[in-house]
Image 1: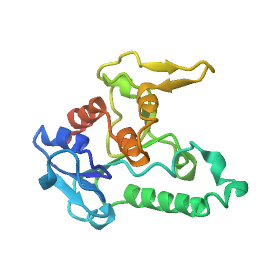
Image 2 (image 1 turned 90 degrees about the vertical axis):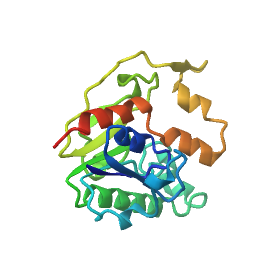
Image 3 (image 1 turned 135 degrees about the vertical axis):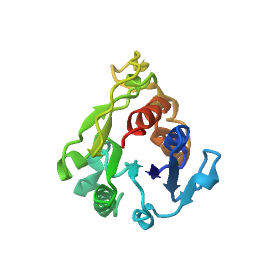
Image 4 (image 1 turned 120 degrees about the vertical axis):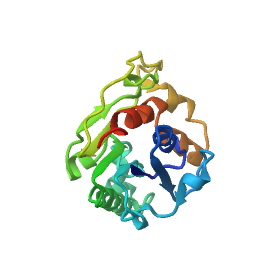
Length: 206
């Protein structure tokens, strides 16, 4: 199949599909960091949606789609974040353009966020620790003509316990001190176990 991995610079998912023989391409505004620029489309993904892809897996930017920091959308924060509400509307519009793309099989991945109410509930919510990575990070999947993923290797998640009683995932805790852009990239990268499940379970569909 010819597969578009939208909004991916790491090429984790792209390489997983390439490893089993598919013509997969990552696509992002940023240059790729996965070592295969020949498989990377550095452009606005909306400009390539009609390029004959059989499948698309997309992970649109989640900063304005997640429910985290919802308080900052209140009027009292308008001076601090003057464009935040319009930024959210733009993010919703971009998400829906991906969801409505003329591609036969589509999977959109995002954290728990507003699209569950602005559009529809996800078809499935998975965790990295269902697929061999000991991280806790609820990940929603909205699917079109694709089956739900079956867990491949359930392990115990590594959880950080704070004195306040709050818990944290290991990745979230370890990336707190990174610069903003590095932190965003580290947290948005698809876990290898999930990427392998995408390829192994969806890569052999007719």
